[in-house]
Every structure is written in structure tokens, then in C-alpha cells.
Amino acid sequence: QVRLVESGGGLVQAGGSLRLSCAASGSIFGSIFGKGWYRQAPGKQRELVAAITTGGSTNYADSVKGRFTISNDNAKNTVYLQVDSLKPEDTAVYYCKWTRTNGFSYWGQGTQVTVSS
Image: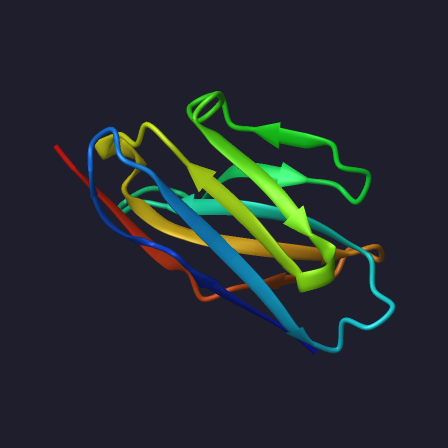
């Protein structure tokens, strides 16, 4: 099975930046993945933040477009989310998700991002 571990979260001031990482391990040999980042704030639904396909196409939520950047490093089996110009409303637990070509998905445990005003 695939295991995903997020890291890079923390407490930052509004306007600050973080680089979140999602590293995969386990039975990923020969696999092809789509990758994405989601977030969930207290009392809110989990929402898609950014996604990247195996072909390199990216999609972003309107709320983060222009501020967040998703990227992928196949050699390291790691997907990144660069988060810039952070706002207090970005405060949430950020989760990564990898999806196999057959549609089966794996989720990480999440990393907390807290943005203070």
C-alpha cells in the first residue's frame, strides 16, 4: 500500500509563506498517480486546493489561485504545495491525495497551517 506523509505546516503571519511536502512510500513501484492538495478548516467541508495530473496540468481553487503553486518531483515521489501571501482564512489542515490510474486514492494524515493576523 501507499503511505503519504505531509510536512511543512506551521504558524505564520499573514502575508507569509510555507512549502508543504507530501512524500509517498510503499507499493508505488510501477504506479501512475494524479496528485492533489485539500484542506479542511474547523466546521467546514474538506475542499480541493490544487491538483496536478501526470501530464503536468494543474488546477487551483479560485480562493488560492495566484498564491499557491503545486509541483511534482517524480524522482522523490513527492508533491509540493508552495503557499504564498497567506491569509488567516487559509488556516486549515492540509491533506495530500494521490490517485492511481484505476481511481484508487490514498490520503495523508494532514499538516496544520495556521495564519495569524
